[in-house]
Image (cartoon, rainbow, N blue to C red; front, top):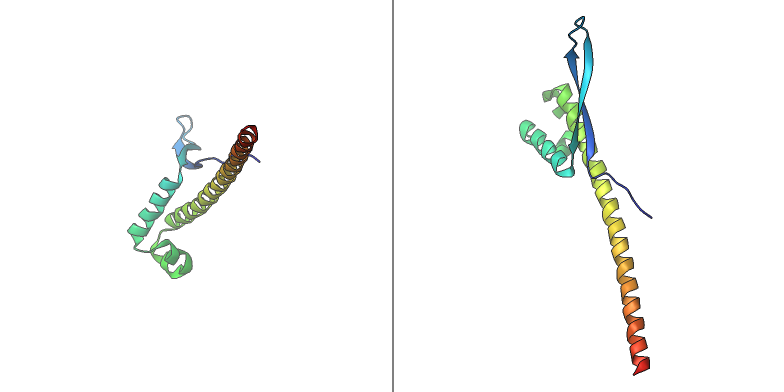
Length: 122
């Protein structure tokens, strides 16, 4: 069974832009790829900025009163991204280990068969 898992999550940031014609607004966006290290660094930044651990942030809603709404949303998103990336890493690791174990077993069986054949020929 093959598992295809992206190594990073893609985050799209929307920014308002003013069009030259008519002065109407339009949403533009840019895509940023974040790996697990990046997401964990962003979470640490929030923890350092607000002096609260992520566990406290998730357990104590009173902490939220000192954090702007946009930052709350971002922090929660990064926590969710981290969970998804950790799950993907675990799935990839499990798949890798199952293949290594299978390869190792097959290799040992082949060596044992070769050794048996050599012993029979001797």
